[in-house]
Each structure stands twice: as C-alpha cells, then as structure tokens.
Image 1: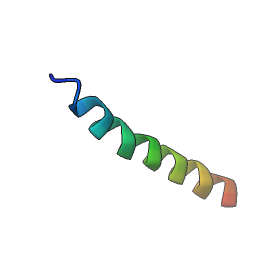
Image 2 (image 1 turned 90 degrees about the horizontal axis):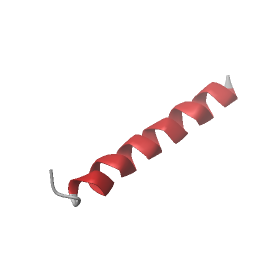
Image 3 (image 1 turned 120 degrees about the vertical axis):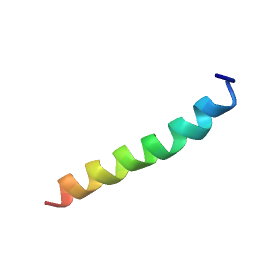
Length: 27
C-alpha cells in the first residue's frame, strides 16, 4: 500500500472521530 493512501484514509477518519466527539459532547 503506497504511503499516499495513508493521509487520504486518515484525514476522513480523524474528521469523523472529531464529529462524533462533538456530537457526544453536545448530548
């Protein structure tokens, strides 16, 4: 797996986790 795909995959995951964290914090 080329190193190119790591940030491409990591960015949406980090953003998703941040979104879930904010949603849980709002509740």
